[in-house]
Structures are given as C-alpha cells and as structure tokens.
Image (tube, rainbow, N blue to C red; front, side, top):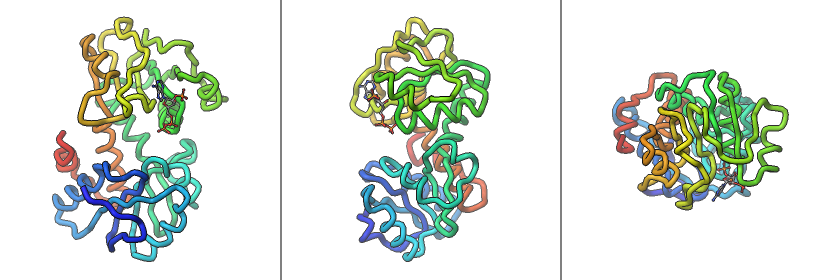
Length: 267
Ligand code: ATR
C-alpha cells in the first residue's frame, strides 16, 4: 500500500495520518467504499510526525482535504487540535476522526469497539476485564462505563492504571483474573510484539469473549490461548472496519457500504 510524506501529499479529499502509517488498511477500506457507491473521492495514507501535526494539518487544509483519520501516535494531539468535539469525544481524551472545515473531532474507535462487543452478545451490565493502561485502554474503559458495563482493569504497571481510572468506577485487579467476565479486552501493545499476557483462560466462564484490539497476519498469543480453551475470539479488524464505517458516515452523511468495506480487508 502506498503512502506519502505530508509535504508530498497529493490532492485528495480524505486521508489517514500516522507514524508509521504504511501498514494502515484504511485507504483500502475507504477506497472500496467509494468504489462501491461510485463516489469520485480519494483516500490516502500520509506520514506525519508528532511534532509536525499542526503544520501538516494546515498544509492538508490548503490542499482541500475534507477529513482525516488519525492513528498512533497522533490521537492525543488531534484531540488538542480540535475546536469542536462531537459525541462525547472529550471523555476519551483522544480523537481518531477529524472534519477539517470546522476543526471538529470525533472518536469512532469507541463506538466501533462497543458495536463489536454487542455483535458478540456481550451486553451492558456484564463484567468486562480490560488489560492495559495506555490511550486505548483509557478510551475503552470510559466507553464501557458510559454504556453500563461493569469494568475491571489490570495493568502490568499498576500505578499507571491507578492514574488512568482515577475517579472512575473500575475495580483494579492484582492479577488478570478472568473469572466471571463476559469479555476480556486486550488493550495492551503486547500482541504487536508477539508477546503473551498472564491470563489463566481455564478460569474463564463458557462463552467469555477474548477481544484483542490489535490485528495482524497471525493470531496473537492472547487469542490463541483463549481459542485453545474453546472461547469465542475477535481481533481488532472488525472494530477497525466499524470505526471506518462510522467515520465515512460522519463525513459524508450517508450509510457506509459495510459489506464492501469488510470484504476489502478480507472479512
Ligand atoms: P496505547 O496508547 O496504544 O494504548 P501505550 O500507551 O504504549 O499504548 O500503552 C501500552 C500498554 O501496553 C501499557 O499498558 C503497557 O503496560 P505498562 O503500563 O506496564 O508499560 C502494556 N504492555 C506493553 N507490553 C506489555 C507486555 N509485554 N505485557 C504486559 N503489558 C504490556
């Protein structure tokens, strides 16, 4: 998949910004949506370094871009850049979708995540264990609480999780104890490094969903552990498609062609 440095960005309408960004599936997914609906729009991947975010956005606005998705490590600066925050994005401290015209920001990762959870029949009221204390864990925990799930948290470095959930109704665990959970969410970056987490899947209830926010060619050790116990699993790909579909709908004000978008990433 081709990508551009922001100074060499082509004229287009939409883009995903990140660093690195070469691995992003968003151009494929959005291009498939445009093709499916016969829309004359272009979506490209652009590398933007954290320290150059503001400059890069000025440049893209001047080129006529309408909207951008942002990925690691830009979601927090994107949040700061926005003058309008839609749909509770202020609660998550991170924005992944921007409408450039009015500097409006939105977080479609969280609703995308919740939608996949519900698709697996993990309903509000059930207990969800979230592993990790980075930006993703922070957003997911707040989204779950807003929706009425009972949230437990575990992080390798407990102090970091303490800070992230301060003032929130989250039970902090010493061990990643999966007992009594309807779902266990891996919001750490362990899977990106091919590493496993200290989860004892034999303690999980039947039907407990293992949800890894990461995705890749190979199934993560976290998901393999759960599969080995006969538990349902999902990686982050369905959530990626849903956040993309929600961004599409927000920018263009029409239903996203989800089937074409899912197919474009091999689902
Ligand atoms: P992001 O913003 O993408 O969520 P991050 O801020 O880099 O990512 O946070 C990464 C998270 O993964 C942290 O919670 C980290 O745990 P620590 O707070 O102890 O550093 C967690 N993490 C990364 N590698 C891990 C591993 N091998 N085992 C357990 N947790 C890991």
